[in-house]
Image 1 (cartoon, helix red, strand yellow):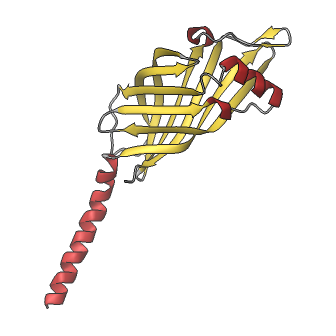
Image 2 (cartoon, rainbow, N blue to C red; image 1 turned 30 degrees about the vertical axis):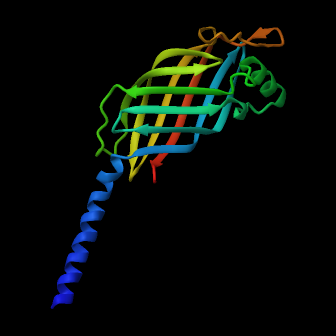
Image 3 (tube, rainbow, N blue to C red; image 1 turned 90 degrees about the horizontal axis):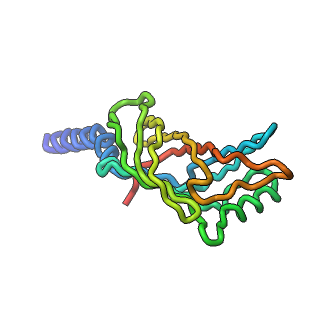
Length: 188
């Protein structure tokens, strides 16, 4: 009889912990070590995209903070010469990272599983220049993980970046930036 009581309490404790797990996970920091960031550049009659799958970042739901960065040397456009020129233009030897740090400005329903529109306001830094930006995006909960996608535009001149030339055509001043990341709960 005593053994049955212990088994019942053990089962009850396990069920309680399983039920509480999603709630406990939401209070944690979620992070990624392999998010994707891409930029799209325009020149007359041609567009090209550079991508890196090494974006690192985190969202701290309790604090409402968002922090992401990428090593600019990992961006690839598919053409070696263009990659080399891009690294020279961005001066990655002196400014190796692009970073965004900000605060969620819209509420996140921690229980919803449908995609939620969110907004983050903060500082985007590249090429040694930091500017305040507001970035719209979506967050979608998948179990204890979250999928983040965001897209915004920036002007190269706002970051003291001279648009490069491809032959006689200059790359457009406006760049479209997109990120996609799956963030898992931080484990201690």
